[in-house]
Amino acid sequence: MTQAQLKNVMKYHLRNFNDEGVTINDSTVFNTVLSDSDGYGNANSKYIFRSVIRWTMINNGHADKPWPKDWFDKNVEYLSSKII
Image 1 (cartoon, helix red, strand yellow):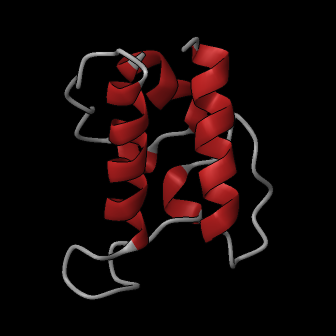
Image 2 (tube, helix red, strand yellow):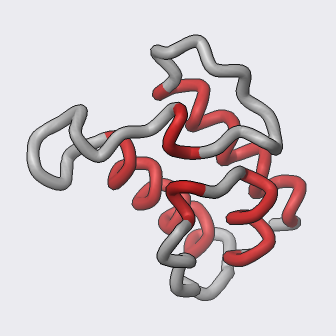
């Protein structure tokens, strides 16, 4: 998986959670689409998104790298460059 492919996967899943009408692109900041308070416990869009991306990376042969602590306040371009 390349960084471009990872960004496409991230944007695909962000579109699925996007009930705010946010434009989804490489500059989309995660906290404008995802939330840590829209579910029950860890079953929220922030946690589910992170889990899906981690699963995708592992199943495509990548290491399960630690995510930056500030990823939620950053954009698609930033995070993809840190975990690819």
